[in-house]
Image (tube, rainbow, N blue to C red; front, top):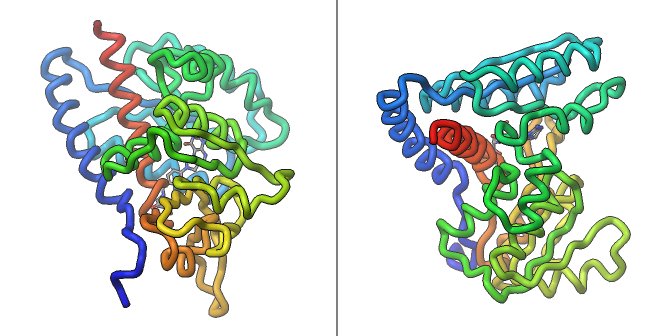
Amino acid sequence: MDSTYAHILDGKALAQRIQAQISEEVAQLLSTFGRPPGLAVLMVGDNPASAAYVRGKERACAKAGIASFGHHFPENTSQTELEQTIEALNQDERVDGILVQLPLPDHLNAVSLLHQINPDKDVDGLHPVSLGRLVRGESGLRSCTPAGVMRLLREYQIEVKGKQAVVVGRSILVGKPMSLMLLEADATVTIAHSRTENLKELTRSADILIAAIGRTQFITADMVKPQSVVIDVGINRVSDSSGQSRLVGDVHFDTVREIAQSITPVPGGVGAMTVAMLLHNTVLSYKRSQS
Ligand SMILES: Nc1nc(=O)c2c([nH]1)NC[C@@H]1CN(c3ccc(C(=O)N[C@@H](CCC(=O)O)C(=O)O)cc3)C=[N+]21
């Protein structure tokens, strides 16, 4: 019976609405200040998944009227070359946001590059200053993926305050900032990870379960509290028996949807929101530079 299935949290539709609003705002900002917001994206090498994400970001910028400055480097690019590019972009007044597409090839020090970005242009929210502001509860640029999750919860009027939230995954890109944002919204937050004992008992206590493990369909129905909210941050490319490739999350969607109250799909959930939040951060950074 269809009515027993979880409500689908449609990140794709919400992201489109947000991007349409951003587009209107950008048109106004352009006529007031005489230039559009600008985003610089640095990509190294030819990882097809990264290239696809970067194309998605550039397409979204173009649609919203945001200028994008793509910097595509060969696989063997040196640290110095990237540092010089970031330094130039830090100074460039047309550029409000700088993003280094991750992962980088092994010979490069990604952390040192992220540290070099001017925190006021850190639209990915990964600079220590941005993360420090989040820890302190100060305003600042927030990491796009967890910010997208918070926006999705807010738009669907899902109560966070006082709820038990369990975040599975402790990465600097998602798990840690996600936990802090849920805490900021007055959830009771537990961070679980690969060494957590009795993981299933813990996830079954979650009113809001965030799956950010990076393992295909890891969260199964037996790990989920009935009528809870399940947010799938995972993006895993798998090929099915006929050799067709498709995207699946960290949640076993087909069984968990029979247990949960609400669930995000993959694709069409959190991933789409990530891009919307990137544009949001770029406009935020632009407005701060004008005032
Ligand atoms: N510095 C940095 N910042 C990032 O934000 C960053 C990164 N590096 N490296 C890789 C991950 C991944 N990521 C995604 C962005 C959009 C979708 C997205 O639009 N997904 C759509 C469609 C995906 C498709 O169909 O291919 C969806 O889930 O519905 C997914 C994943 C950003 N990342």
